[in-house]
Image 1 (cartoon, rainbow, N blue to C red):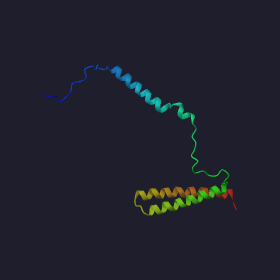
Image 2: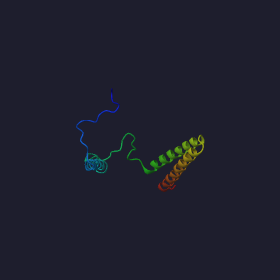
Image 3: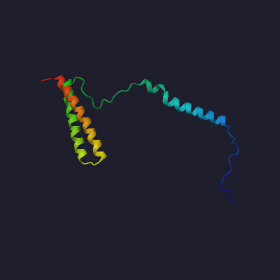
Image 4: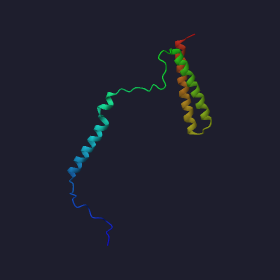
Length: 118
């Protein structure tokens, strides 16, 4: 007749509570060291941004601000169009995003006015 519950392994010695706590303590220490004290290989390399999309270093501030202003205006229109197709909380969220974009556009316009007051 086959048993439904298998026998425990023969060479298994019961562990004491102290041994279990010691193993737990070592595991916790390894985990904390891994996350809080990373290996030096991560600290040695400085982060280099991607040069795939790079702005020419000789661009003047006025051109950069004008481009940023146009980009923000486009993003505001896209958010407005997107919000018109939504209802409820999703619409309110997109309208809030549009408002943040508009505030950024106002700030860029003011900076552009400060660069070229005429």
